Image (cartoon, rainbow, N blue to C red; front, side, top):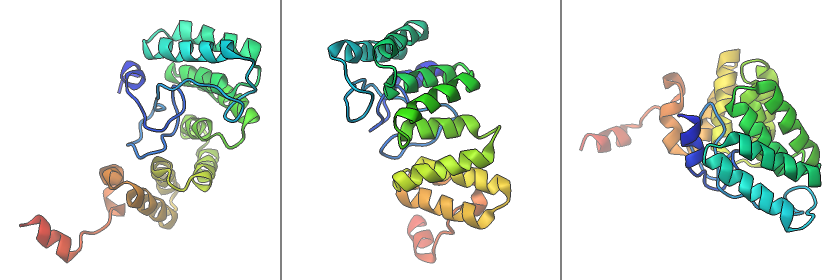
Length: 208
Protein backbone atom coordinates (compact mmCIF):
# COMPACT_ATOMS: atom_id res chain seq x y z
CA UNK A 1 0.00 0.00 0.00
CA UNK A 2 1.50 3.32 -1.03
CA UNK A 3 1.65 6.40 1.16
CA UNK A 4 -0.73 8.21 -1.19
CA UNK A 5 -3.24 5.37 -0.98
CA UNK A 6 -3.04 5.44 2.79
CA UNK A 7 -3.69 9.18 2.91
CA UNK A 8 -6.45 8.92 0.34
CA UNK A 9 -8.51 6.44 2.33
CA UNK A 10 -10.42 6.77 5.57
CA UNK A 11 -9.97 4.70 8.69
CA UNK A 12 -13.29 4.42 10.50
CA UNK A 13 -13.10 5.99 13.91
CA UNK A 14 -9.49 7.17 13.74
CA UNK A 15 -8.72 10.67 14.93
CA UNK A 16 -6.36 12.33 12.49
CA UNK A 17 -4.03 11.44 9.66
CA UNK A 18 -3.18 8.13 11.21
CA UNK A 19 -3.73 5.84 14.11
CA UNK A 20 -5.52 2.78 15.31
CA UNK A 21 -9.11 2.74 14.02
CA UNK A 22 -11.98 2.22 16.42
CA UNK A 23 -13.49 -0.41 14.15
CA UNK A 24 -11.68 -3.41 12.70
CA UNK A 25 -9.25 -3.11 9.82
CA UNK A 26 -6.51 -5.30 8.44
CA UNK A 27 -3.12 -4.11 9.66
CA UNK A 28 -0.55 -2.44 7.46
CA UNK A 29 3.12 -1.74 8.02
CA UNK A 30 2.32 1.95 7.93
CA UNK A 31 -0.20 3.72 10.16
CA UNK A 32 -3.79 4.10 9.00
CA UNK A 33 -5.39 7.48 8.24
CA UNK A 34 -8.52 9.48 8.83
CA UNK A 35 -9.81 12.80 7.58
CA UNK A 36 -10.81 14.39 10.89
CA UNK A 37 -8.66 17.26 12.11
CA UNK A 38 -10.52 18.93 14.94
CA UNK A 39 -8.80 19.98 18.14
CA UNK A 40 -10.37 20.43 21.56
CA UNK A 41 -9.37 20.64 25.18
CA UNK A 42 -10.69 17.15 25.87
CA UNK A 43 -8.73 15.30 23.19
CA UNK A 44 -5.62 17.42 22.74
CA UNK A 45 -3.71 20.39 24.00
CA UNK A 46 -5.63 23.38 25.29
CA UNK A 47 -7.32 25.32 22.52
CA UNK A 48 -6.21 28.88 21.83
CA UNK A 49 -9.12 29.59 19.50
CA UNK A 50 -9.92 28.73 15.92
CA UNK A 51 -6.45 29.41 14.50
CA UNK A 52 -4.81 26.22 15.76
CA UNK A 53 -7.86 24.13 14.82
CA UNK A 54 -7.90 25.66 11.34
CA UNK A 55 -4.20 24.99 10.89
CA UNK A 56 -4.67 21.43 12.07
CA UNK A 57 -7.46 20.88 9.56
CA UNK A 58 -5.39 22.50 6.81
CA UNK A 59 -2.44 20.24 7.62
CA UNK A 60 -4.63 17.13 7.39
CA UNK A 61 -5.98 18.27 4.01
CA UNK A 62 -2.46 18.99 2.74
CA UNK A 63 -1.26 15.59 3.92
CA UNK A 64 -4.15 13.79 2.26
CA UNK A 65 -3.31 15.65 -0.95
CA UNK A 66 0.23 14.29 -0.72
CA UNK A 67 1.92 17.59 0.17
CA UNK A 68 3.77 16.43 3.27
CA UNK A 69 6.11 19.42 3.38
CA UNK A 70 3.19 21.86 3.56
CA UNK A 71 1.38 19.63 6.06
CA UNK A 72 4.45 19.49 8.28
CA UNK A 73 4.75 23.28 8.20
CA UNK A 74 1.09 23.63 9.20
CA UNK A 75 1.46 21.25 12.15
CA UNK A 76 4.60 23.07 13.28
CA UNK A 77 2.58 26.31 13.29
CA UNK A 78 0.00 24.60 15.49
CA UNK A 79 2.76 23.71 17.94
CA UNK A 80 4.02 27.29 17.95
CA UNK A 81 0.62 28.20 19.40
CA UNK A 82 0.01 25.02 21.42
CA UNK A 83 3.24 23.30 22.37
CA UNK A 84 1.41 20.32 23.89
CA UNK A 85 -1.08 19.70 21.08
CA UNK A 86 -1.05 15.91 20.85
CA UNK A 87 -2.72 15.89 17.45
CA UNK A 88 -0.01 18.02 15.84
CA UNK A 89 2.78 15.94 17.40
CA UNK A 90 1.00 12.79 16.32
CA UNK A 91 0.63 13.92 12.72
CA UNK A 92 4.28 14.96 12.58
CA UNK A 93 5.07 11.46 13.79
CA UNK A 94 2.92 9.98 11.04
CA UNK A 95 4.68 12.04 8.38
CA UNK A 96 8.10 10.99 9.68
CA UNK A 97 7.04 7.34 9.88
CA UNK A 98 5.71 7.46 6.32
CA UNK A 99 9.14 8.76 5.26
CA UNK A 100 10.88 5.89 7.10
CA UNK A 101 12.31 8.33 9.66
CA UNK A 102 11.70 6.06 12.62
CA UNK A 103 13.68 7.97 15.26
CA UNK A 104 11.90 11.23 14.48
CA UNK A 105 8.53 9.48 14.37
CA UNK A 106 9.05 7.88 17.78
CA UNK A 107 10.20 11.19 19.25
CA UNK A 108 7.06 12.92 17.98
CA UNK A 109 4.80 10.14 19.25
CA UNK A 110 6.49 10.44 22.65
CA UNK A 111 5.64 14.14 22.71
CA UNK A 112 2.02 13.32 21.89
CA UNK A 113 2.04 10.76 24.70
CA UNK A 114 3.54 13.28 27.10
CA UNK A 115 0.32 15.26 26.59
CA UNK A 116 -1.88 12.16 26.87
CA UNK A 117 -0.27 8.92 28.02
CA UNK A 118 -3.29 6.87 26.92
CA UNK A 119 -3.58 8.31 23.41
CA UNK A 120 -4.19 5.11 21.44
CA UNK A 121 -3.19 6.25 17.93
CA UNK A 122 0.24 7.38 19.14
CA UNK A 123 0.71 4.20 21.18
CA UNK A 124 -0.28 2.01 18.24
CA UNK A 125 1.91 3.75 15.69
CA UNK A 126 4.86 3.85 18.09
CA UNK A 127 4.48 0.11 18.61
CA UNK A 128 4.60 -0.42 14.84
CA UNK A 129 7.77 1.67 14.61
CA UNK A 130 9.41 -0.40 17.37
CA UNK A 131 8.46 -3.87 16.13
CA UNK A 132 11.76 -4.50 14.35
CA UNK A 133 14.17 -2.79 16.72
CA UNK A 134 12.58 -3.30 20.16
CA UNK A 135 10.00 -6.10 19.91
CA UNK A 136 9.67 -6.49 23.68
CA UNK A 137 8.82 -2.81 24.10
CA UNK A 138 6.48 -3.02 21.13
CA UNK A 139 4.62 -5.92 22.75
CA UNK A 140 4.30 -3.96 25.99
CA UNK A 141 2.75 -1.06 24.10
CA UNK A 142 0.29 -3.31 22.24
CA UNK A 143 -0.73 -4.77 25.60
CA UNK A 144 -1.37 -1.24 26.84
CA UNK A 145 -3.46 -0.49 23.75
CA UNK A 146 -5.71 -3.50 24.32
CA UNK A 147 -5.94 -2.70 28.03
CA UNK A 148 -7.28 0.73 27.07
CA UNK A 149 -9.55 -0.64 24.35
CA UNK A 150 -10.20 -4.38 24.34
CA UNK A 151 -11.86 -4.03 20.91
CA UNK A 152 -8.54 -3.18 19.19
CA UNK A 153 -8.44 -6.21 16.92
CA UNK A 154 -5.39 -5.16 14.91
CA UNK A 155 -3.41 -4.54 18.10
CA UNK A 156 -4.18 -8.11 19.19
CA UNK A 157 -3.13 -9.35 15.76
CA UNK A 158 0.20 -7.52 15.73
CA UNK A 159 0.83 -8.56 19.34
CA UNK A 160 0.22 -12.16 18.32
CA UNK A 161 2.75 -11.88 15.50
CA UNK A 162 5.44 -10.64 17.88
CA UNK A 163 4.60 -13.25 20.51
CA UNK A 164 4.84 -15.98 17.89
CA UNK A 165 8.27 -14.74 16.80
CA UNK A 166 9.39 -14.68 20.43
CA UNK A 167 8.43 -18.34 20.83
CA UNK A 168 5.52 -17.78 23.22
CA UNK A 169 3.03 -19.79 21.20
CA UNK A 170 0.39 -20.06 23.92
CA UNK A 171 0.19 -16.29 24.41
CA UNK A 172 0.31 -15.80 20.64
CA UNK A 173 -2.62 -18.16 20.21
CA UNK A 174 -4.63 -16.20 22.79
CA UNK A 175 -3.87 -12.91 21.03
CA UNK A 176 -4.83 -14.29 17.62
CA UNK A 177 -8.01 -15.78 19.09
CA UNK A 178 -8.98 -12.36 20.42
CA UNK A 179 -8.23 -10.70 17.06
CA UNK A 180 -10.40 -13.19 15.16
CA UNK A 181 -13.19 -12.99 17.72
CA UNK A 182 -13.32 -9.23 17.21
CA UNK A 183 -12.92 -9.33 13.43
CA UNK A 184 -13.25 -12.59 11.50
CA UNK A 185 -11.90 -10.75 8.47
CA UNK A 186 -8.46 -10.91 10.08
CA UNK A 187 -8.39 -14.72 9.96
CA UNK A 188 -6.42 -14.79 6.71
CA UNK A 189 -3.73 -12.58 8.31
CA UNK A 190 -3.20 -15.07 11.14
CA UNK A 191 -0.52 -17.75 10.54
CA UNK A 192 -2.20 -21.00 9.51
CA UNK A 193 -1.18 -22.97 12.59
CA UNK A 194 -3.00 -20.48 14.84
CA UNK A 195 -6.24 -20.35 12.88
CA UNK A 196 -9.29 -22.04 14.39
CA UNK A 197 -10.02 -25.52 13.07
CA UNK A 198 -13.33 -25.64 11.17
CA UNK A 199 -15.98 -27.67 12.99
CA UNK A 200 -17.77 -30.57 11.32
CA UNK A 201 -20.92 -28.47 11.04
CA UNK A 202 -19.16 -25.51 9.40
CA UNK A 203 -17.33 -27.85 7.02
CA UNK A 204 -20.61 -29.48 6.02
CA UNK A 205 -22.23 -26.09 5.49
CA UNK A 206 -19.32 -24.97 3.32
CA UNK A 207 -19.76 -28.05 1.13
CA UNK A 208 -23.42 -27.41 0.40
